[in-house]
Length: 345
Ligand SMILES: [Mg+2]
Image 1 (cartoon, rainbow, N blue to C red):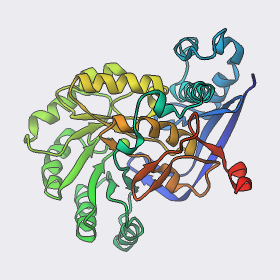
Image 2 (cartoon, helix red, strand yellow):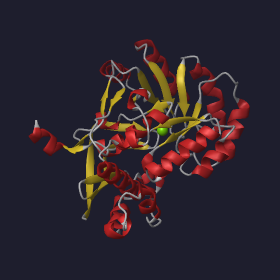
Image 3 (cartoon, protein in one colour):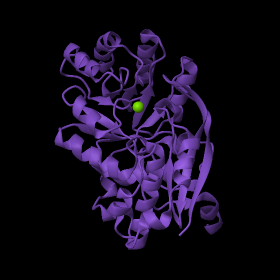
Image 4 (tube, rainbow, N blue to C red):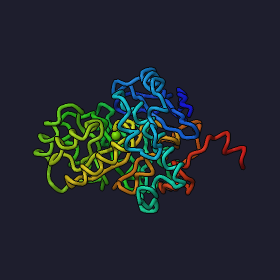
């Protein structure tokens, strides 16, 4: 059993601006376990690096991980040493792929999920204050029923202007993501105004670390608002408990959670607390997105569009067309190396 680690650089089609900064490339990591594969996205904003993810994965002994029973997935996952969440996500995904391939079924089927019941994925529009450019982006996103608008320009008036313009340009459903940009007071003043534009959700309006701020914000807001979803503020199950009663839901990403098993636990906890679930992604290839798509039938919202923003994708996996997620019926994740997929057709 071979385990190989492959650092990859993903290039974006156009610079992707959000409140945390602008990206043109992302440094991710793939791990291959025999024919199986997983991906982690070590986003620097969370304090992770590609180098530490690579080092963690290279330290793993695949024979020790799989043990005597390669179908005892839970035991293999229990054997993973502590380490950075994106690296753990990569090997967790590869182990799930391997398990499902051994059993000859798509992963979603082993979980008893029907991919036809996955929510439609959002398509994200990154920040621009150029109105003509924003109109062009809205036109280019035609056919996507849900647009997610990145806000956090540094100017509340400009943030509202983005939502107003997009609302004028399209009948698509709109959600917004401020990526931690607003103070509690700013959020309390702008959110009720933005709600007038018929929003589907409002994501991470305030900075991530002070969970009490979420409760302060909630006390200052009216009740009849679109759901407030926490993203950056949620990494561990304990974060979900602390947010209950303040946020209406959480955005779960495999690379934040440390993989599919932890993501499923977080979904179960959110449901227990009567909270909604968005399944999101970082800038990831089809490996990471497809793994997340297998869980999408358990979510209320899907935000799995990142491959549509890539100049090239090393894998072929879930198809995202008009927001709909199409998973293959192949065993495991159902992802294929692009060079192999091309030569086979
Ligand atoms: Mg977000």
